[in-house]
Amino acid sequence: MKSVSISGSLRESVGKKDAKHLRVNNQVPCVLYGGKEQVHFAVEVGQFKDLIYTPEVHLVQLTVDNKGYLASLQDVQFHPTTDKILHVDFLQVHEDKPLIIHVPVKVSGNSPGVIRGGKLFTKIRKLKVRSLPANLPDVITLDISNLDIEETIKVSEIVVPNVDFLDVPSAIVIGVRSTRAVEEPVPGAK
Image 1 (cartoon, rainbow, N blue to C red):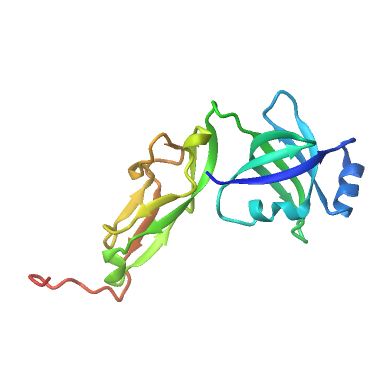
Image 2: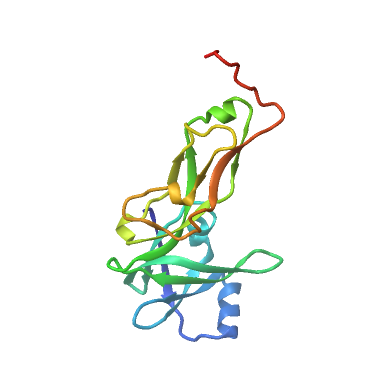
């Protein structure tokens, strides 16, 4: 699992006035949950570029006033009209406790159904998984080399060692639909 490093400074006071003052100075108020106590801190807005604006999932190496934490991004609040980051919540990750996180789906291979004119569709772009942090995959790669027209891959068919999938087992992740331009195989032809 990839990780991103972010460093911040503890907030002296917590409240609307303080948060507004931080935002004016290009800082984002943040909170770290899941430890013995909550940690309120501020981070320069530019540090979130490699964490929030990417489809990849990351663990975060947080450094707050020279103290290190391993965390995952839990929630981001954006301004409704400007899309500026208003607030970020992190959850402290413990190496011995399972973590629930959404992992992106990646497709590999060439589908015979698509080659014959079918259309590949993706229903779930990120799968919800539970695993120890050491076993978390960066992406879940699905091989579509055996997918013909009207065939799908469901959550229950995906196997990754030491990872539990929390989405509905019968949910379709990816599949191939028929289109009007589908070539029907000729009997006896190869």
